Image (cartoon, rainbow, N blue to C red; front, side, top):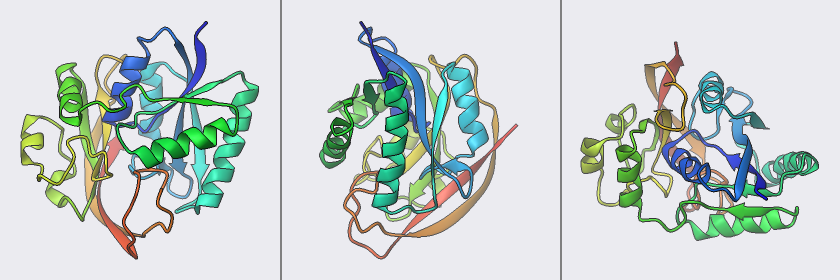
Length: 242
């Protein structure tokens, strides 16, 4: 019997490709998506995508959506308590597995597995340890389309945000940036492809630079390990629903 599973949905390309593969795996029954949302701004945590576009993705995927509503820049203890409450809720609904689009951040994988195990869940990682160059080219080859909505200024400048990921984008990436942005270098919004019933329409809005206090914990729950710094800068490209 298939495991009733939550899919941890970021709305980006890695999440989309992981969902693409797990939907073909008869061992798992995806009952709902789960996405962290910044409650203050009504946007997807870290990615900065408007909640309306997240809702449009879920509708196009034909899957229910649960939202983990977080305060702006929650502490690890706050995040863990809110997540624990959510997992208690879904466990009561019969869920046993939680699925992620992580690729190779060992610390983050171990953290997820440990926290889930303590609550009686098992974690599954459909694209774990895949070569990231191979993954992004598979994603493009399958016909998916995704746009860069956030870049970490330490690695990429303003010109990269708002671009659609294609061969030109990959060729322009500096050597120290992972092709899938697996170290938090960039985040994306996927708006078209095989798992979607219809494309998600939007217009490109303004680009803004924002600076945030660096997390003290080695895991920031969104993009993996961060170096010990006082602040981090990010470029965001707003996507406006139409």
